[in-house]
Image 1: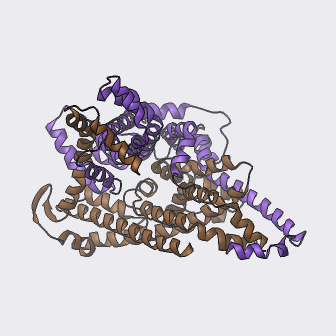
Image 2 (image 1 turned 180 degrees about the vertical axis):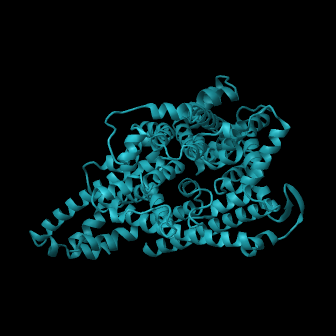
Image 3 (image 1 turned 120 degrees about the vertical axis):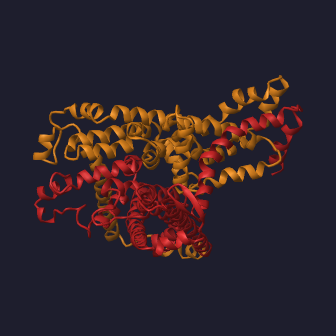
Length: 316
Length: 297
C-alpha cells in the first residue's frame, strides 16, 4: 500500500518540467475524444431522445414518459414488446437449463478424466468462437426440411417419422433456437466451472470420502456449494446474453422472428422499431425501448449479483 | 466440519470391495462415451459445413449427408466473385484491423498517464472510462446512426466505413484502458528513473521502455477486441451501404440471393469463419486464460 502510493507520487517530483500537463493532455486526448464522441454522446442522447416526441428526425417537444407508456400500451407495438419479452424470458430459462446442467456435467467429468481433456475442451469451445450470424445460417441449412443434415440423418437411421420442419413450425421454432444458442455457448460455462473445480482443494473431497460419503454426496454437499459464485456469474452472463440476443435469430428466422413472430425477441423489436418503422415517432419509441432494455438487464443483473453474494456468504 | 470427518477416519478406509469399484468403472466408461458423443455433436455441424462447401450442388441435393469424395473448389470461387465475398472479406479485414489498432493505440496512450502519474481528475477520468464497460453500445444505436449520417453529409469525402471504425475503436476503449492501466501501474519505477537520469524525454520513455513492457497485455487486449468486432453484425447492418458490407452482413445478402445453393452458402460460411479458427489455434492459450481470468486461486 505504502509502496504503491510512493510509486505513484514519485514521478510527479521528478522530471520537474512544465510540459507535464500538456504531455498528459496529449496522451489522454485521443482516447477521450473517440470515446466521448462515438460512445458516451450517443448513449446520453439515446436517453434524452426517449423523453421527446419526434416527427421523422425533427424533435417535436418534451414528451415525458409518453414514449415509454406507448411501448406497453399502444397496440401494434405493445403486442410485439410483450410477446418478445416473454420469448426472451423463455430463452433465458431454456438456455440456463441446458447450459448449466450440461456445462456443469461436462466440467465435472472433464475434471476427473485425464485423456483427451485438452482436445475435448477445445471441441466444446469452438462453436463459441464462430460468429452468431454464421451459427444461425449454418443451422438454418442443417435444419432445412428437405436438404438439411438433421432430417437426412434421421431418415438414414430409420427415424424418418421424426423429421420435422424445424424452423417452420411455430411451436418448434423457439425451442430449436434455444438449443442452437446453447450449442454455441456451452463451452463458456464449462470452462468457468472447470476453472472453479480446479481451484477446490483435493483435501475437501478426500476428507468427505474418508468419512464414507458417496461420490454423489461429495458432489452435492461439498463441490456444488463451492461452485455457487461461478453459478452466479454464469446466471448473470446468460441473462445478459439472452436478453441481448439478435444476430442468431436474425440469421435463423429473419428480422421478424418467423414463423408468425414465434421467435421474435426484444433485440429484433428494437431493430425494427428503429430502422423499419413507418411511425413518425420511430426515434422516440426505439430509444425508449433501448432505455427499458438497459434498465431491465442492468437492474436484474445487479439484483441477481446481490442474491448470489448472499448465498455465497451463507455457504462460508 | 472437516475435523469431525477426520476423527471418524478409520471406519471407511476400506470401501466394500468389488461392487463400488465395478460401478465406478462403469461410470468411467459412461462418462467417456458421453464426453466424446457431445464432442461429436459440437464439431459435427462445423465439419458438415466444411464438407458441404466442397461438394457439388447436385451431389448435396441427392444426398444431404455425405463426404466430399471429389473435393471441388468452385463453390468458393463462386462465393468469392459472384457472391462478392472478395469485397466483404477485404472490408472485414480493413475495418476490424484498423479498429483494433486505433482502439488499442489510443488506449495505450491514455492508460499510461492514468497508471503512472498522479494528477487532479485522475480518479474521475478512470471512472469515466470504466463506466463504458457497463453500458451496451447498442443502446446508442439510433443516435450513432444519425451522428454518422450527419457526419457523412458534412464530410462527403469520408466513407461510412471510417465512421464505423471510429465507433468500434471507441467501444474498445473502456476495456483496454482498464486492463492497460492496471499493467502500467505494476511496472517498477527504477527503469523509468534510470532513463530519465540519462536524459530521455517523456515520449521516449513511453515508447521505448513502457510500451514494450506491457506487450503481453497489448496482445490480450487486441485479441479481445478482434473477435467480437469481426463477428459484429448489428452496426455494419445499420451504418453501411450494401457495397461496404462486412462478412456477417454480406452473408445476409448472400443467403437472400442464393437461397437454394446450399454448397455455395456453406462456402460463404467457411470463408467468414476461417480467420477466427486460425486465430484461435494460434492463440488458444490467451483466449482460455482470458475467459477464465480471476477464476483460479
